[in-house]
Image (cartoon, rainbow, N blue to C red):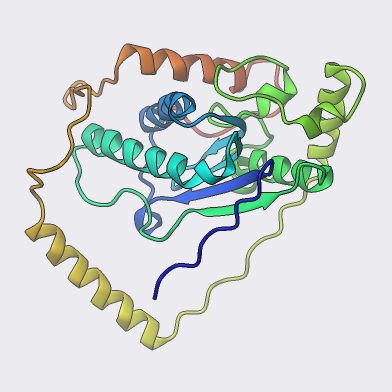
Length: 265
């Protein structure tokens, strides 16, 4: 059965959720998230768009963006998924699917629906806090600092709905900070797993592992325009500088009240 086409209205922002394959914690390491930040920066030259919110978690990521041409969203996400998977597999020395085989989640948000935009921004920025990784909203792999400190991180920009909160940038930042402090995380109910589902899961995993053993070598795979030294755990210097700028603008500082428990590496 073919997939139904996405609804891609022009001028809308899109809340994107992309999960690692089998929801594994494939991007828990800071160096892998640095790669993702560099890929997001390169994507802006591939498909013109505006990136408003970023949050990279251990097994998934959230984005809020608006393509200049909404019909180009599938092309943009295909490039991000393909390029990041190739780079991260090369870096980690693994093979196979990196992201979930199912399509990324994309929710369209009308440009005049300011309340929904702000709720989405807050939800994205609250992910580290809701997961218990942070006590507050500042996180080196979330662009909440871009809104809270009004500093440029080199990748994202402010959403027009944020700029309408007050007559000055500082006023917008203060009002958004207060709005975020009222966030209350709603825990999700535990998923039910019947005996049939458990058996099907084992069968799928067994067939998947056997396919991976047969298809471990891919001679026709497209080559990347760079080479990682897996032994030294290094990435290109240009990519490293993109990540450093982002983390400096958004990461936790000594003066912040919100102290975290997560280590970068």
